[in-house]
Length: 326
Image 1 (cartoon, one colour):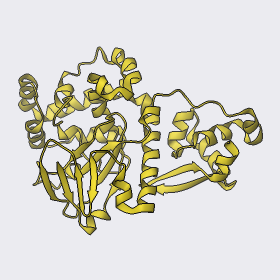
Image 2 (cartoon, helix red, strand yellow):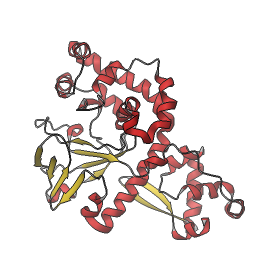
Image 3 (cartoon, helix red, strand yellow):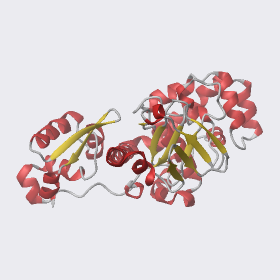
Image 4 (cartoon, rainbow, N blue to C red):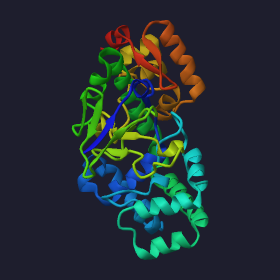
C-alpha cells in the first residue's frame, strides 16, 4: 500500500496534466500484454504490423510489462499539456547520473541493455528518445487527437466532481485501488510506503493506453531531487476508454443539419463530451480556425458552453443544445 498524507497546501496544489509520453510508454505494455489491456485490442492488431521492423528491444527493457519502469522516460508532466516533442527533449536532457539511478530501479533489465546504457548514458538518452519518437510517429501520432479528446472529457468530469463534492467526490470513483480517508490518500500497491506530500501537491494524470492500471510516482526513490519530473503523481485510467477505438461519430440528422448547417450540427453532435477546439478539429478533420468560428456562434446561441479547466478551454453542449440534438 502506498499512502500520501496531505497538508492544506498539498490540497490546493492538486492539479491535472496530460502526457503524450506517458501514453507512449504505457502503450508499449499494452502492445505486449493485450489480454491485460483488452480495451486496446483493435489498436494492438492494427499496430503490431506497423512496428514489426522497429528495434524496440532497448525501450522494451526500460518498460517491463510488470514492475518498475525507468522514471526518466515515464516522469511526472511538468506542465498541463506538454507536447511529445517537449517531453522527448526532456528525456534527451536527463543528466547521466539520473539515468543510471533510474536504470538501477528498473525491473529486470537484461545485462546487455544495462551495460550499453551504462557505457554512455548521454548517448543512450539520445538513442532512446529517437526510438520513442519513431515509435510515436508510427503507432500513436494519428490516434493522439482521439486520445486527447478522451482525456479532456475526463478532466472536465473530475473538475466538476471536485467543485461539487470536494476531494472525497474527486477520489471516490477515480479507481478501485484508490481511497481517501481524511488527509490520507491510499493506493493499493505491492510496495509498502507512507509519507507526507510536504507541500508539493499531487499531479493527477488521466491516461488511456495504460487501462486498467494505475501508476504512481511517490518520490520515495528520489528524496534528494528537486526536479519537477520526480514530484508525486497518480496516473489513472480515464473514463470511457472502451469508446476510444469506435468509428467516427455518425453524421447529424438531416433536420438538424438543415436547421443550423451540417458543420455546426456535426460539432454539436460531437460535444456530448467536453472537448477543446484543437481536439475537435483533429477529430472531425476541420481547421482549428473554422471550428473556433462555429463554436463562437453555437456559444452565442446558447447551444454550447465553455469553461476553463487546467489551463484548457473546454466546450460542451448546454441543456438547450442537448434538447435540440434529441
